[in-house]
Length: 363
Image (cartoon, rainbow, N blue to C red):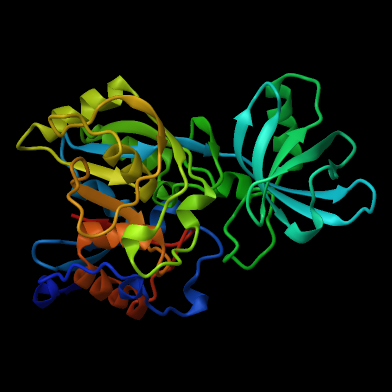
């Protein structure tokens, strides 16, 4: 097991400028497919206090947990949000990306359309013979509000979207969507429909790995945050205090709160949060005594340095894109200097990047 030391880098600066979070990477390191088996993905373990780095695999993850420790996981379920249709009158191809349902009874959805310049209010878009929608409003240059022209129940509409939609694998994965992506781009924790992107760190888990953790006495606390495209919207301002996140829907149940707070108030157990999306959920729902509280709603929380994490004691995450809100959050947790060093080590050792790539555990 290789260990590299970066203790000289632990005197973190506190950057507030976007340019501090850039780095270059070779495109051939972007993972087009998840590791098979999932447990064979690589795991970089980074120690915040010493700067040590260990090179392991996901199969080794249970070694970093003890009985009574907690793993917080996002149980959102990805739905096939990318739909291809045609304008009723011209037959022109239109891609519609479903962002969020506004009203189940009236079938209203916020969407992004391509090519946007050809999609106007009043246009009708057909998705085969069974489903069509009318554009009723412009929200942004690419955003629209549509109403599905469908008379059956909301559940029947969801089932139809599941049939005609495509799995929304990220655009940077330069390949066509495949039928197998429906399972590949879904975590074993998935329970609640509503995400347009998977919590990437959760993709590494299998029933076998979860069984290994629970046998050790690790408690798993599910939380829900329905990831939208706002998480991945480019940061276009140098001053991070001026960036505004799109709101995303979250829910944290009382059972998970009890599990997490029991570990937080203990001097012996740790809380590991799996995925940056779960971090946003738990750090958005903090009680007056600085523990986790139950709740549901919308969060536009943008985490950047300096930030004092109240719930997240350890973080399991994939390698994130440069200048993204996700890499900025990871840098707030691990320290910008140490994360720069860790990412250089990852590139040197050819770790696979992004959604289907390898993982990092920051302890």
